[in-house]
Length: 79
Image 1: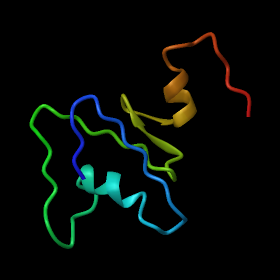
Image 2: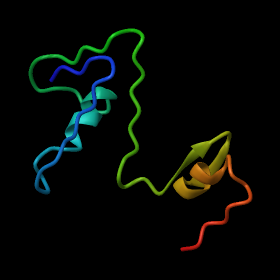
Image 3: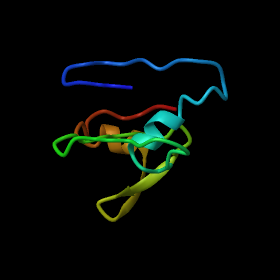
């Protein structure tokens, strides 16, 4: 898989096909069984796990919704 500056990639497939494996390899949350993952020095990789409900942000435990709405305090989330 080769992704260059400005490229966009879509990954889709059936449940259990390995879609989540790609970002986990890119963030070193998972090590490859074979081969290697090479990421250039000036590249930043971000990944938001699908099963993440809360996480630490600025020494507080927050929900994803709270984090995303943080820059917009006048917006209230309705669940």
